[in-house]
Picture 1: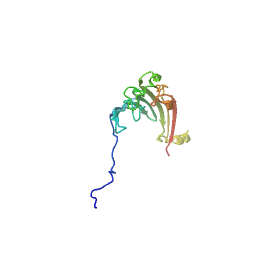
Picture 2: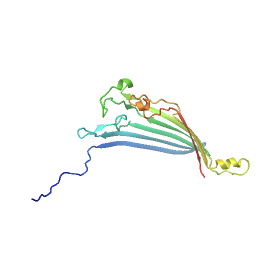
Picture 3: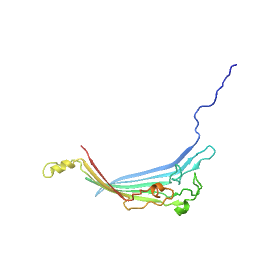
Picture 4: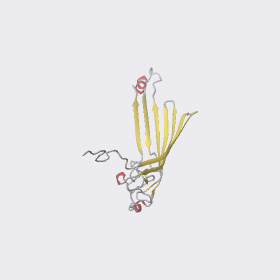
Length: 206
């Protein structure tokens, strides 16, 4: 007996689940020289229109935008604005981060659960929008000044050095309450549970 075109099964790969996303990234920047130095202005925004994902062969694609606590979801709008100033060895800057409001887990439309037990704790279906402001001041020594004469030892040490000090969340904004995030102190994941924080950077080029 001869068997023709006989096989035990199809071993080829199959894409079982589908995931798609649509959105916009917008970036603007402008540099201007003014009497008190140079200004760099910038702004960027991410708009997520859709995050659609299928998690089972028997289920349709579901929308995850506005549900960052549900699987691979995310809030819809994220914005960053910045102003940076430079003059001589000095620099300073301001940075603003904005995150749009998003739905609490279990709110109507949640793609993974209909359990609304967290809603009474949150007090609302939506978590409010939030924004945080950061500032820094820096000083860079480029080595262009003379290293001879009085104080030359200090100048030689500082040549090629850059010192920057900054503060994150300068206005000490408290992240909104998020009833789903026990691991983050019940605070929104877009904020920092440490609230205002300070940082220092020292760099030396040889």
